[in-house]
Amino acid sequence: MLKKVQPKVWWTAIAVLVILLISWGLVRKNKTDSPDVAVSGENVKNLDPVAVTNPDAAMAEKIAKIEDIFRRKRKAGFNGNVLIVQKGKILYQNSFGFAHMKAKDTLTGDSRFQLASLSKPFTAVAVLKLIQEGRVALDDSVQRFFPDFPYHGVKVDMLLSHRSGLPNYIYSFNDSVRHGRKYPDNLDIMDWYAKVVPTPQPYNRPGRSFNYCNTNYCVLAAIVEKVTGDSFGKYLNSQIFTPLGMQNTYLVTDTTIAATKNRTDGHQYGRRLDKDYYDEVVGDKGLYSTTLDIYRFYNGLTKGLILERKMLDEAFKPRSFERDGIRNYGYGFRMHIKEDHSPRFIYHGGWWKGYNTMLWVCPEDDAVIIVLGNTYNRSTYDLRELLEVVHGSVKIDDIEKDI
Image 1 (tube, rainbow, N blue to C red):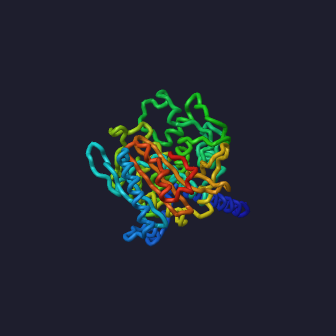
Image 2: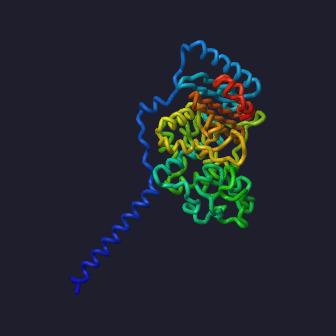
Image 3: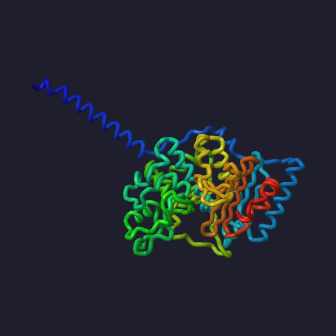
């Protein structure tokens, strides 16, 4: 009798073992540290722009005009760093003012600025990389990762393109929900949405229209953490920052000496702004970086070092046409579009607690403009005159003064 039963027992045992191994593999895929992306040192070196020592007459004229523009911006109160690169060559690079107004310590090229919403392109790229690897899908619902999330029908592509209709977390929760908890993180926000009664009202139905909302990118950062088993900062560092040689880019939540070195303070009306209640919610904001690291990020993307070309094209594809006009949004990037809906300019700005930031790209002219300020000043976004110098007045005749 035992001989007749024993083979069945062995087959059952083998089947159970196979199931356990498969399950273990899936858990390892979702929970273990992501392997660092391997990028050669030569590739990283080639991401930096080249200084021009002997500009020709045309470039010298451009440089002189740019210097005059920023001389006037400085008089108007601009305090920050600038890097302008065209065809891989530095047209202009300078620092104006102080890292900390009270200390009067001069800004340098290594000074790190809070990127505010300019953090969103980094979050989008992190998610697109997971999509490229097959670990996340554009049509995944938030409930795949957070089953108790109360808003149904919201998919990853809607979060990336600000078409989810979700309410802004900054205004969603009163003191009775917070229970005195200061500095919540992304998972706290997800937990609050799941438990608060009544559920905060959404702005719109999922997918119906574009509505720029920080909650989208707060949720995306939480999804990255859930899928990878890493903190959001650790994933960004291993998959984007280190591969691209971005040694001066860290999340605000990283309090190590290396991460806090050369950080500036945000100011408004000449006074330093204290830490905000929501400062440790990241993805929608929270990155500190330098002008050179941001250039490395964009240059590395276009060279295919992080995302395949097909996936990057998805990021730069406009997805909001409810209103007529040249402004549009892709996956983590704003853009001004041509009549054929291809991107004419790609950009993203940011504002948070005294910081003003802008990354502006013209693919046709191979030009990149990066402006980072740490004293609130609208001149950071007033780029029209600068664009006329870099691109020519004909190309920007329909660009607004304030981007």
